[in-house]
Image 1 (cartoon, rainbow, N blue to C red):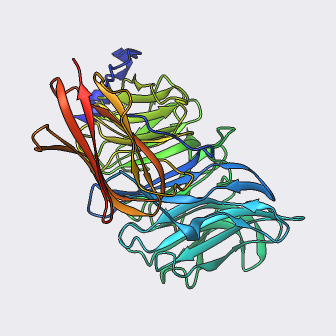
Image 2 (tube, rainbow, N blue to C red):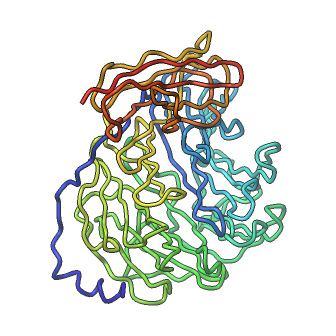
Length: 464
């Protein structure tokens, strides 16, 4: 059915209407902003591990920030990931992690890459952890004051011991043409598979200039398929990296998406055409015009008709496999510049959306923002909602002096529990949520913050 619909694309017109959005919750943001977003599917599930990287601001020894956080499973809070945090070199120059991949079958296994600039030395570094960050080892790639030489890396989706790295520097020796390396023992040893000229460096990525770099991505349903890009073309392997073929009729793509539901492969070229392939890189690639400047794409795992696209203007949505797109949400104040989208463990149109300023969980008529940086308060506090009375949206703010497992629930005037607004473990700081009472009738209600050591209840009034 999908290929039949694709063939009808030339008679379809692009729609620019905006879907109506109501009742979204937007919470306080951070002065650092959001620098990067990674969502990694877990094997055999529709769940994802989602990582957010803090932005950078001037500090006493150069730039500071760039720390990583992992969203909790409920998408109500985050936890720091210290081993991915930025590092200060002896000269005081800042260097952050730039790219991460995580094993689908063992989330404790992760490879990450970054750049350092210390004095006159500027090189990339490539590291691995096999125990969730308890220990981190340096891989034999990079260094030598040569800037970013990595062309991409990935871990087999079915076997965490099998890894790939495309690089020009191995054990301190530089090779002008990048070589494709493979490890079958979780990165302990590496051997060369192929040499491929022109592979694009991964240093270009979504950032202030909006540039994109290279990648090396293993297909999740067929680990023999590996995709990469040169400056001008798409390249691929169908024999687990032993040899690569340059696809001269398909341009270099800035985004590559494996649609696991339909087992299709999609790439977005720099002219914003979506190149669709039925899962066989040797076969035809059909280009479709998206009609907007595509920054990222996500396919809904529950309904593969639904695609979501990030742009400078907000989130676009397609309900027919990317054939037609319309602006879905452009209400991500103060910025609609979308750097990442993930659709996973909630049904329907539930998304985790990161702009360059805030992170949101969206579903039905709610957005919950996940703050990245807070001043630590001195005590627990549940503040009075504002406005009060209200119709239908009010803001509830609360303070946590220590990391706490909390809940905020709404009760009727006779004490009946009506709904849970927040639940989970949260870092210390000042937090807020916006509560939409459109489903409640006029009247008096109570909301309660509970932790293991603190409980406070306040009254709110809905007037319609």
